[in-house]
Amino acid sequence: MLNVLLDSPGGSLDSAYTTALYLSKYAKTLKVYVPDRAKSASTLLAVGADEVYLSAFGELGPLDTQIPDPRNPANTVSALDCYQSVDYVSAFGFKTITEVLPELVSATERRISVNELLDTASTFAIGAVTPALRSVTALDFGGWGRSLRIGEHYARKLLQAKTKDGDYARADRIAYHLVYGYTHHLFPIDRLEANRLGLSVAQMEERLYDETIKVVEACHRKDFVGLLGEKHTAAVSDQLLEHSGEAGRYPSGDGRTDYDHPTGEAAISKPLSYAVWNRRRRR
Image (cartoon, rainbow, N blue to C red; front, side, top):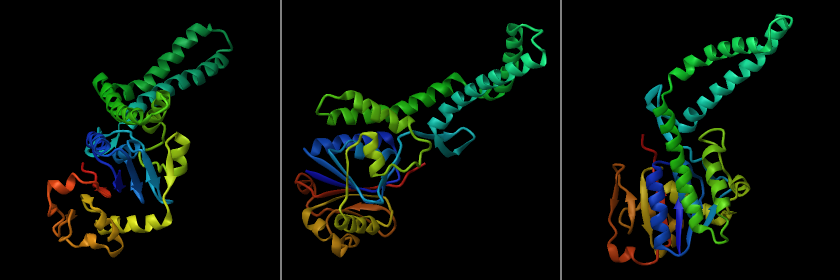
């Protein structure tokens, strides 16, 4: 059994997926604990677990892929925003036709056939949406859709791998909703929302939350990926993680992470109590 203490704002979907695969292969039972947040790509780690525990403050997040903002490549934006913008423009054009046509019929006192007025209304609507659609190429549109399918595909694969009753349709529904079902990328998926979605998420005990949040705080929100043996897990209450001499991988004073496990690979092959994941998003 491997217990994963997860605290992350997200990052690469590819990295999160491969990490979930590796951890699942390493242990027969994978448990993920989220005392605070496992947003964006890090949600995949929770999706790929056998058991997930969220505190009263813990939350997961949608899996809509983040891409460079077409308006300012220095920033990121959800590919879903770009992808659905075409739908919004199309809906606006159709709505324009349905609103303009009755007005034309009334203004002409039905002296002009509806077919002729429909041509006029269509021309007006096309003129309203063309400037917006002109800035979108087929390559852009296809790229946005493909980016979104990455998160959906990864989530589906992880969920199907954990499906024991053969209900793969459930995995499809959950994966689709995690990508397309929320209003924005920062939407908080708490325990109740996760269970409503179809994920099996349990409440983290208060005592366990108190201990795990000490580990998160000891990392000081810096990049941190580490493996803790049983004795180090037991010592969490004393916050021994802050001492660089302890076995494992800890943040060094200059913000880098150093791997200084005294027993090397032999220790990694033994059952571990906790694997800690705390990575900042890199743009």
